[in-house]
Length: 285
Image (cartoon, rainbow, N blue to C red):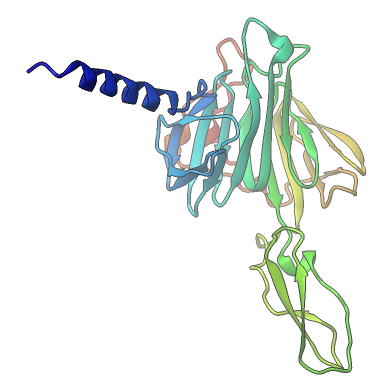
């Protein structure tokens, strides 16, 4: 049946309006290539989704793994990034063009948890940069393989205050450094102010701070306290952004043991790394 010309024109206009309002997605920067457990993503527009194997990733995505989860993402330059359990990683910036290294860059932000990174083509050129940032220090990765673990301080270690007042049962509000939500503090005339709500303690056996293990190549840690280079086989630690990174003589307790299904080689074509992320038991005794 033929539609009236007016109806056809109206439908064409509606279609044009719908297409004009549809956002154009940028080329994905990588995909999820292995997963066991639950992996969530928060997009730059605030949308939250559950990822699966072959799910594409965009620059600006925030990845969050749940308990008992390991997730490996492979980036466009063949870099491999494996997230451990309870990890939050922000794909802050990423640009890669194999024919033009001048603008190649990757900045990943580890807010909490642990990651195993095997660099691919990115970071091997003279102008390439590949950086992992954390609240304690920035790591220049550049053609290396490493494990990084950031243990965030508990709320009681971030916000504390000594206070006395003659008025019993007075309540004071104070904002946490890590959250905009106010923390409820209680005080009386004879005791210091105490947090009414405490966060669960950090990882057992590990003090808050940034821990690194270099498996191949070399990395450089830099913060306000100084800079330190770590070579293959070395472990490093820095407790905060104001204290310099130091070499530690043995594994301080870094554990990263993905399931056997992660044992597929992920090194770049023609690259030097032959490490299989899933096959590495990074607990050095």
